[in-house]
Image (cartoon, rainbow, N blue to C red; front, side, top):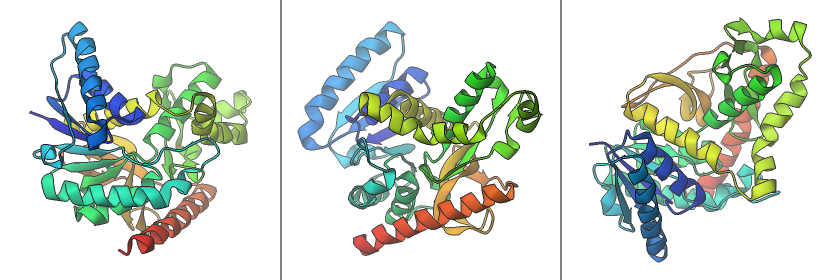
Length: 316
């Protein structure tokens, strides 16, 4: 059996991840954890999901719960709970209130699911990854943030649309902060195995416009419909499935750094990592252009400042 528990399961992201993950048919049991006053909603979500799963002949045990003990024996515990980003807000605006929530959950996971892998989604995710790591006391390879996985998928689609090429031919990656200080690695982007710079020579590509579009994607969605939903939910479910199936894929996730890349340490950032059933098997060393290095250092500085700020507020 493979068991996943979701903290914040009645929120937009939590319930969508539960349903998307159930449809992937790689998980035996999903616990939808929520507050006591939201348990009826969780029960309703489960009944609705069962109807859809029946149509696809998928069997997955869905358990609505407001009891931390139901996390026991989880392979992965997903933290989605926290204040959601509203229009006009930056992810870093959420740091202080969400740190208290994630810190508490980290301790509860350590108590009830000490052998699990923690996957953090709550924003600002790089900051929250460190908070969850320190609250749980887990090995750093078992505390993973969604990081720049979604950003990398977004950049892939932007380039695929621009060149009118199947997205499967686009190999690109975003690292750094999941936010304004993300670093698109265009220097190592390829299309059909050919470096992006050779496509640029034959076709006009406004790099600044592409990067700005990438950074504004989340805000654009929130401005139009109030929240991001399908993209994050699929990206998270894909991460969970990658870990559970021991795929050893390289994805851009947030993890606590100890000099693995450009001698950056003491902060969680999005970097390319090999994911397996044990969590992060290895962080992939990468070579960047000088301007990308500079942006990566800037991301590290900003995220560490915010992390230290919220840790001081939590008195840890």
